[in-house]
Amino acid sequence: MTWTRPVVTIGGERRLLEGVLDRNRAELANTLRGLSEADARRRLVASVTTPIGLVKHAAVAQRIWFQHILAGIPKPDCDGGTTSGDASFVVGEDETVADVIAEFERVNERSRAIAAEFELDEIRTHPGLGEVNLRFIYLFVIEDLARHCGHADILREQIEHLR
Image (tube, rainbow, N blue to C red; front, side, top):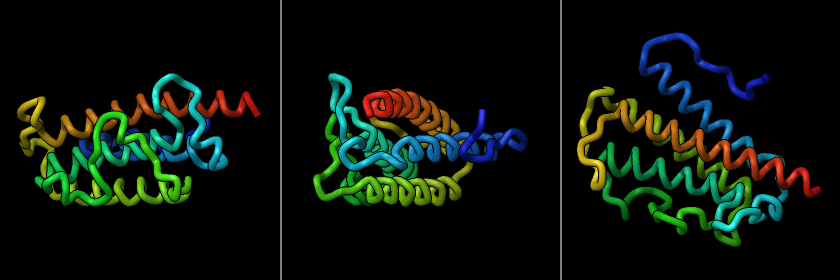
């Protein structure tokens, strides 16, 4: 298998968590690269899930976890919005694939910068889960992005098969 991003395989716990998270971030964005605007918006499942919508949703999720939960920024003050549910998958007509990837990469960078200010054991309160620490946030976001990478891979495969 050829990886599109170097895999971090050794190091301390934090280095490994951040490496896997960054790999998942890159892999998700890569599933969108090279798709036409029409294909990126193509709905091939019953839900509102589209390739471009998955990347948009992942940006929203990271804003909630890193900006709102970890940094304590009120949701209305988080950059780019923190809509939830199906609304987080909605991409504006004026937003392009390049725009959504750039937004996702900005959110990734801001998330990295915020997380760098905290220790893995730093505790915050999540409204539904109670107390969480940065270690849990990393693991949760890694799992969430990995699941969405799988969704995106399947959608990309379907789109390429239909061409």
